[in-house]
Length: 516
Ligand SMILES: Cc1cc2nc3c(=O)[nH]c(=O)nc-3n(C[C@H](O)[C@H](O)[C@H](O)COP(=O)(O)OP(=O)(O)OC[C@H]3O[C@@H](n4cnc5c(N)ncnc54)[C@H](O)[C@@H]3O)c2cc1C
Image 1 (cartoon, rainbow, N blue to C red):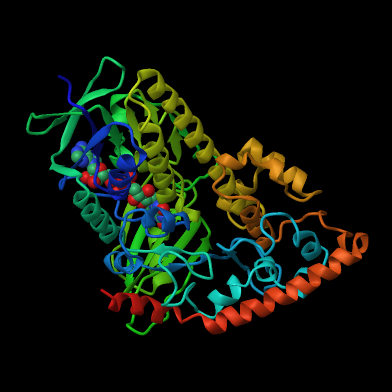
Image 2: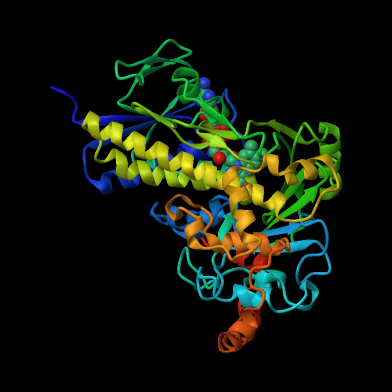
């Protein structure tokens, strides 16, 4: 008699492996279908990547499904709150509303949602220096982060607050917390180093082979083995679509910088442009996680390490990481699915790595629950592959936008980014049109987008993208213009009130730390 439980084996105990395990252990039983026995294989001899400390607002909804409190998560992962990304030095000169080269990409949508609404009137409202920054004009969140405030009050419900938010955290501690949840929900852990895999008759994987000569069989395998991609790449040969000719950065150095117990914690990720890359700076309660992502074609390891140390004011040895930018065109082959770095990687400019793990876990929870029949399994694989590759391609365009919608051209790195020959066709098509007209929903296949039109507008107009769109909007529709002006005033006022009512970010983080 066949075993009624289907065996799902996850290879890899990094953030991808443990998040997928914790999510599926709760979501698969809830989705119905066959029962699942989930096992995760991890090896103390193969380190995790150990970075990946900024997240996307979707993480709140994902963590909320795990059945633990937000306070427990914040304490366990040493987390703080993130309300967007503050970019410095990307535009090549002063940006609209600023005397310096700086702009903010908030997580809050513009007031009025994602319709262009206020944008034409902002564009038509005078010279760059005479109007507030676009993000300041359309949401109060920029005022909240400038005041150093958190996105919620201590009494607000878990996973929600007046401002949209994500988190910063300690990657190793997050993985341990997720491990605890997964094992409490029945995930079995095997400590073993995998040296190879046996192919199955269906063209997928039949079993993993351990260094001790044991076999680990499964019905479904999830490859979370990191950049090595032991199953999807080495065993099954899924093609890797390299986009290093679009996004040049292929290395990073990382450095943790201790913080004083009373130092303010920035409620956003800081992204500071450099001659050959950019620095991330993430604030936690006891330290800042900093790193510099750069292109080895344009900058030396020594220059990158020196720039990072100078930024942090900290002279410790840096950690070096190398990566290939791109993604598997078939992340799901037969019974084997890649999640996390095994599926692909693009530079962490907008924290999309863990978000894509969340997306994959959500899709798997639904697709696997109906996939006992081989025809359904093959259909699920095609759907998953279509979705994930389209998502990666859309993210590549959005990240490239950060480099080419501004005017920075001072080094080879920035000049090469500005060269239209390095732009994906879809992005070149969009920018050509947006120099004349406003972005529209029809420019996007919204189901595949991580970043909806408002995010594109925050980057474009944060950078001071040169466009004729919006010209004459006020004269064409004076009544709508008066409404827009009144709305801008209300947003400013609401932002001031929110900044006054919300708690200091460090005080909020420490409040949650004290809760058990
Ligand atoms: C420089 C950099 C910065 C980043 N910043 C961000 C960010 O800010 N936000 C974000 O969302 N993402 C970020 N990412 C991406 C993020 O780190 C990853 O998406 C996330 O950590 C998931 O990694 P992973 O679990 O796929 O891989 P890993 O952490 O590499 O884990 C791989 C696991 O597989 C196991 N394994 C491998 N081979 C074997 C074997 N042979 N036998 C047994 N076990 C094995 C390892 O032991 C490990 O447990 C960043 C990545 C880089 C490179």
